[in-house]
Image (cartoon, rainbow, N blue to C red; front, side, top):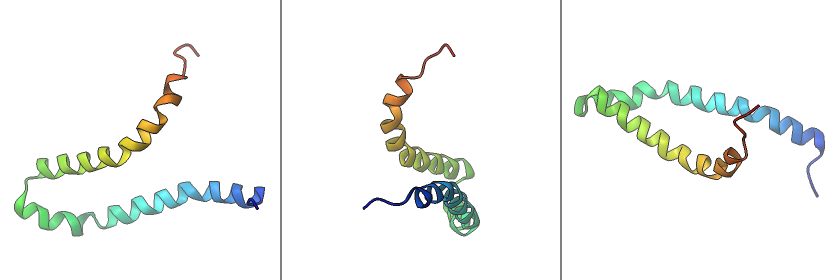
Length: 76
């Protein structure tokens, strides 16, 4: 049995809210996680590591979306 259309629409609408909540909670823990690192690493190194983690996390989703990007046309 599939979910009702109303439930599916509600689930789709709440997904962005969950991403915002997750981002806010990660932002809130930033100081707790970053403070011990500043004793051992410079700020440039910390930012580089953060960006590498972000890229590694998003790379699979971007890879899966690559065929969709190829179908996009340059002319409107």
